[in-house]
View 1 (cartoon, helix red, strand yellow):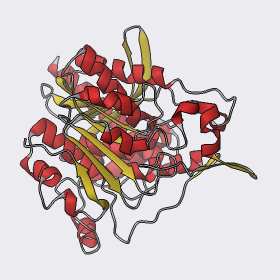
View 2 (cartoon, rainbow, N blue to C red):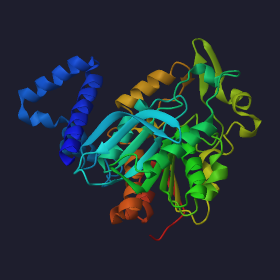
View 3 (cartoon, rainbow, N blue to C red):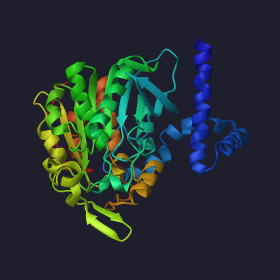
View 4 (cartoon, rainbow, N blue to C red):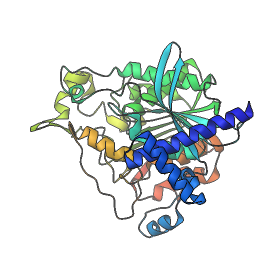
Amino acid sequence: PAINRLAQRATRRVIAMVERERKRARVGFALALAMLAGAMLAGGARAGSTRRFLQRDPARMAERVESAEMITPFRGAGPYDIVREFYEWEYDNHTSRGYLFTPVATPDKKFPALVFGHGLCAKADFYEHMTTVLSSWGYVVLVTNEFSECDYTNFLPGGEQINTTEYVGELTRNAKYLASGGVEEANTSAIAMVGHSMGGGGSISAAAMLEESDPGLIKAVIAVAPWNGVQPMPSAQIPKLGKTPTLLICSAGDSLVPCSGPVTTEIVVGSFRMPFASVIPQIHGQHHGVDWNGGVLAIYENASEVTPAMLAVVRDANHLTIVDSDGTHYGTKIAEEYFSRFLEFPKVDLRPGGILPTIEYSVAWLEWVFRKDPQAFALLWGDDGIVLDDRFVQPVSRAATDS
């Protein structure tokens, strides 16, 4: 059985490498396989392309040191190769489809597991960079692609709306699926919720529901640009998280899910243009207001005083680039192309050599919670870490913890 598992993993790894080559070159599967085989035959060292894709590049990093605001130990990819596979799973009579990212290790090794939630109308592919990097640090990542099919009509009065309550249920089931042992590489007692936008707000609400039904199941929450328009409303649910460490990251340049204040994104379809805020009451209900009930700040301010919580505001990002490292990766580009058909986001330029901090601080949060990493703790809760990182609007809001 152990040999069979190793063979299966090797097969999955080859498929993942071919799929990556196919996307990079935008060719079919057969041609990608031929290209990959040719590259591997051309030089034995190139057979480790998955590892090279994930490893830090010291030369590239050195070029950035001079202009980067802060270099943390958690920047870039972690020590593990990963396998990314199309995945279908079933729990509680519901079938879901998406992606599974698993670190490559010995068959008996177990890793903490993350349930990842995508944004409204966003595909799981849009988050490939973030989920790949998180997994490379030694995390199983389960990414649903359910509730991702919609278009510009979903942003107009009378259009069919995504049922966010059902989406929260999807995230809840996925956590229970991991806890049931559905993924053999996952540690069933070390599960976190991570998400962006609808997935960020949904992660908070799902974790709160699970804290009531299965206390202690969710060990951490990371919500990036969490939408306070999800039902149940995250700002009303977050007090239920109790002592669950919760990291909230939003952006000063986010026009759709602002940290606080009114929504300023515009709906643009051809020559038609209108403020998104003007249709919020008709689409999502009068109770939301044009600032999503106080936005991300309201979520943070409603956290229980016993919750180790943090609100970090990224300077140089919009609603889409905040989940990237520099706004240039494949997922971000296809997300920008997709949403530009009906929404207009402000362009936010990074300073030369700048790296967006979202992913590395997400890694630090997970390393602190699951591995008790002292460097992660110092970075997050010390006096010379995140509070001195100029990539965030200071001061970073922290509900301090001692452990």
